[in-house]
Image (tube, rainbow, N blue to C red):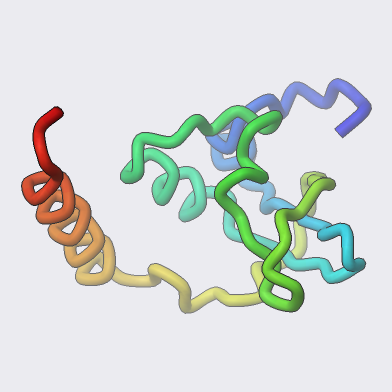
Length: 105
């Protein structure tokens, strides 16, 4: 993330139609669909700035947080993740149900 490539958020990646290459401290790497990931973060009301996205991502090998990110034209490792609107509708319902059941403070 050292160079300034103008990609400051997941939305920037999605708008430029590049995917997100992630590398974990354990050495495992993956390519994530930036448009779907941006939408996922927005559904959860999470910050999409590149400096903060690692806090919500988990490595499928060691369960750690990836610490390096780069743009890539490569296709995502898991293209079927959140691939239809029914999955997004279920997520929205689950998040809405969770918010309704939270105790008021």
